[in-house]
Amino acid sequence: MSEQFFVHPSSYVDDGATIGKGTKIWHFSHIMSNTSIGENCNIGQNVVAGPDVTIGNGCKIQNNVSLYKGVTLEDDVFCGPSMVFTNVFNPRAHIKRMDEARPTLVKRGASLGANCTVVCGITVGCYAFVGAGAVVTKDIPDHALVYGNPATVRGWVCECGEKLSSDLTCAGCGKAYLQNGVGLGLKD
Image 1 (tube, rainbow, N blue to C red):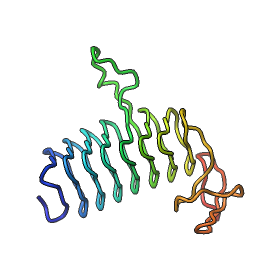
Image 2: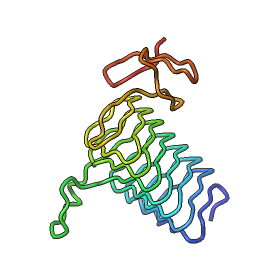
Image 3: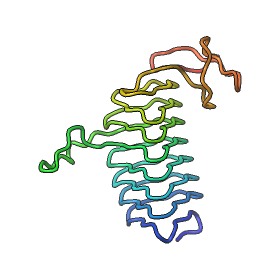
Image 4: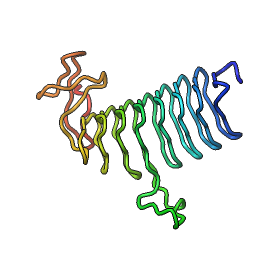
């Protein structure tokens, strides 16, 4: 155990994993080799990460989440309880396809709701919000609010998490946005 981070005694951290200062890893979790976890993350109970996973600073991963090879979370990503990442597009038990694992990127500040599924090879945009139970089968634009099966854009959300009005302004914090080539960006 390091004074820089906390790992509950029931959890395992394999050799070759790196964990940033201030991170907490709770009960029954397993951090595999070549996995990098940033600073000030909160890794919930029964989380498996890796191998070869990157988790940025300030991420919160709730209970029962598995992050498989090829998953990258940028800073400040929220993964809700029991949400699912896949790693092989067409798995079969009798055919080895781990060399076909598709990388998945979740950009800064995105939130992935409880029990949602993110199919491998997807990029979830900055500050996007994926609703509980959604099935994400295609890339999600920055600031998009998506839900359903398959997940579709149903609106837009602010960096603070509030749904934007039709004029793309946040009633909570007052930020205003414009549409751009990757979703929304802040208005100058």
